[in-house]
Image 1 (cartoon, rainbow, N blue to C red):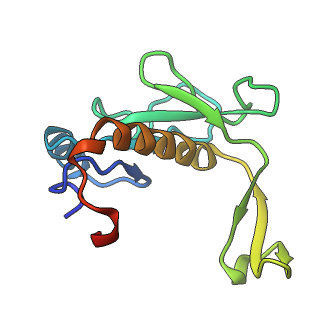
Image 2 (image 1 turned 135 degrees about the vertical axis):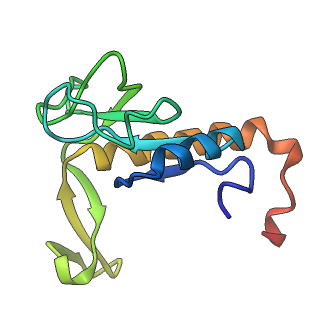
Length: 141
């Protein structure tokens, strides 16, 4: 359903044999795909990030350098984004720090899976700006 509704950026995580066909189908429908590049600290391609029609995202550290764990490769990693020591929400059963004021479970995490949402979110904003005159009334969505 997401693929058939043009203009919905999707953040991919995981792998399947049929994914390349799905990626190409989504791209053909105008869907922007974003995926974490991997956390092995090497240039070996990881999928789905390495598919041609996916924005592969590596992670940077606090100094804006490539994080030591971030997979890299100038021929397939598209962008880098903050991914080291990111404060994120967690399911209660994995809770590290509970913020009682905000009723939220927070945990410091590092990885390209922390970086790719930055790119997916920025892409969604740019996509929305590009298609702003074509979007339906948000109140009816």
